[in-house]
Image (cartoon, rainbow, N blue to C red):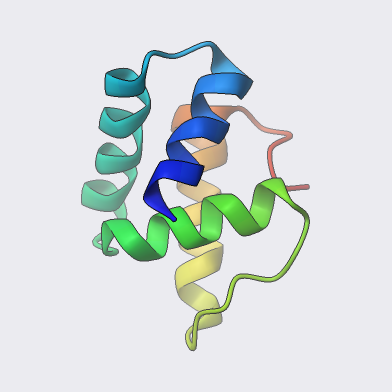
Length: 77
C-alpha cells in the first residue's frame, strides 16, 4: 500500500521516489497516524473510495493534512 501511495504522489506532483516517501512520512508524523494508515487513506482518496480503516476520524485528519501540505486542495475530493 505504501508503494501505491508513493506512486500516486510521484505521478500527481512529479516527485522522485524519495521525495514521495518523505512526503508520506511527514503526513504520518504531523498527524500521529501510522505510515500504513496514511498510505491507505491516500490510495483510497486517489481512487475515490472509502479507506478501510476502523476509525473514520483518522481518514479525515490524514486527508486534511494531505490536502493542506502535500498534494494540493483538490486531491481526494
